[in-house]
Length: 175
Image (cartoon, rainbow, N blue to C red; front, top):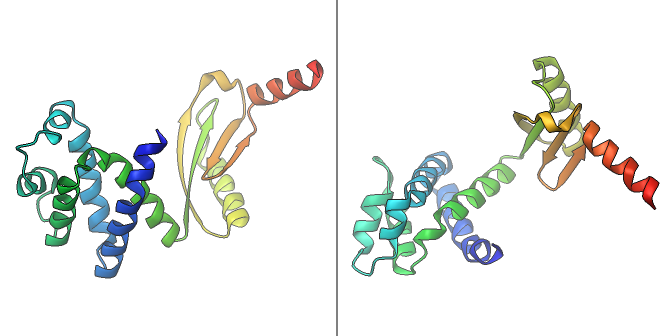
């Protein structure tokens, strides 16, 4: 898994630099998301490695309507280097670079049950104080947590779930 990420990293950085310098970071974000979705389609995925798929054809296939010329050239470069299958990884890394530049932390909160808006706002405020950045929260429900929540914010994971606490207690008792 690390090889695709390693290969995708320079392309994501280059895409972000091009988009940022042109003042089109948001448009490129949407275009890369579109290209990643199309390239991940099983029927299209098989076509991407075909030797007769030209750079112009790849750019036409993977560029959304209204994408700028620079984006088409970027897709053509990926096609020329046989890296079109890396588009999902490139799009993900691009979003990480964009969030970092915008000083936004994306947090995923998984709770045992749906959290009320006031509790989510409290979590957002606490994370904003901790990171000194704006926080975007995405939520999901996992019944197996029994109670509490797990917060995944970049490199930081805070496990406040009852399942996690029981696992830590079991670990302490078996040592």
